Image: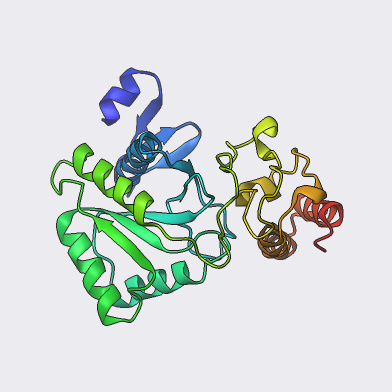
Amino acid sequence: MIRELVDAGLATAANRPHTSRVVIATGAMLSPRTLGHELIVSRVSAIAMECGWSWERDVADRNEHLADGILTDEDGRRIGVEVEMTRKTIKRTRQILADHGRAEFRYTGVIYVGTADTMRYISDIATRTGTANVLRGVAPAVAKWNQDIDNDLLTQFLTDVRRTSAPTPHQLTFDTPAPPPIAPRTAEAAIAPVSSGASTSARRYSDEAFVDFRTRIDPSTLTDDDRRAGRIILANRLNRADISGDERTASNVRRRQQELGLA
């Protein structure tokens, strides 16, 4: 895969002293292992969209655990996605599942996609550590040795999750279908149309919309859940900017908080 990317002019392979071979792609330096993970995530996202889900990357505060992606259905219900190819320690796995349980304003519950033995391990840890309520399901859809994806298995899994996903108190369904979440840096898609009679408790804006400072958000279109989520997201981003001394980001966050009445 690395050779194919290099031949296509999409990456540059390089050797660094005392490190394994790396790939420099789109300005980012990735190890072959990380590149493999990102390619699987991309393929999972493509299959998910074919199944009717919308897909976005998690943009939580970097001090929090980031899911590999977030699925959203036509009713605005959101589920985190993790691609897991190898086992982490029991303690670390339990911590990650607990973090997913606390991400209620970004998504509710998480699904895992990976190898069969890793999926059995995740399910077992969730059951043994009391975090099974967070786990919406596992899909043993990735071959261990060549990382090939079983498209049919994953398609059926994502379709079943979409059918059985029930509304939660802070993710109530829309009276009319909600638009998909925004694409990164797309101003036209950041503001969802307001449908008459829509529930005031449904998320209309993705996490990314709040921190895309080039896109204007009309405060009157925010739902109650948007306000709760936006307040947390912007406060976390401001705290991180203050700690790192990033005055530009801090200024943008404070302006956004004032614009939306979330200071």
